Image (tube, rainbow, N blue to C red):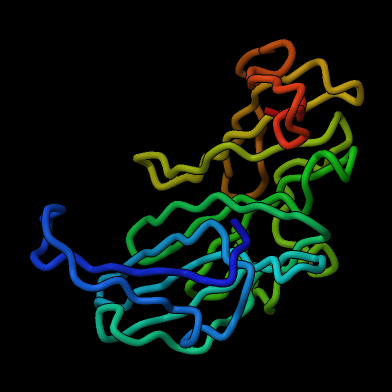
Length: 219
């Protein structure tokens, strides 16, 4: 997690997970450090994108993509597409040749009004169809799904309905971090419409008194 290396292995045969090629460290090609959350996607023309978060030991964290047009043998110089406020996160879903993202600019621990954003990428467009300039950030706002006015938010998932409309799943957490309300939001074509699913009560994660990383009430 946020380490100096990023390793890749490619299967010898398509759809076969029993035999693999050599392990390759991509760090020298990408030229970054502090790698987390690598997500590879492939488009209809065969182009691969490697989407990942970079935490080089200082804030803010940044999200990049690197492209490969030779089936992952070589990777191009990474492009920064999302700059967080501190520790930001994204969820993504590929639908045809469009990538749909939901994003939080921060971790709920650091922002009591942590909002949820949405944008789509490949054609540099926002969910509402307006053009995006990179990197996306809180000062260059994508579409706001939820503004954080009713507790901080934490993204969980993003999906596309069979009718082509976008859906985002997220939680709203009260200031005392004791009440989690699950919402799903739908893009109507003009605005985001949020719907309460259920009030789940407090956090559902485990609590480890000996490890501060597992004492968060946001899970």
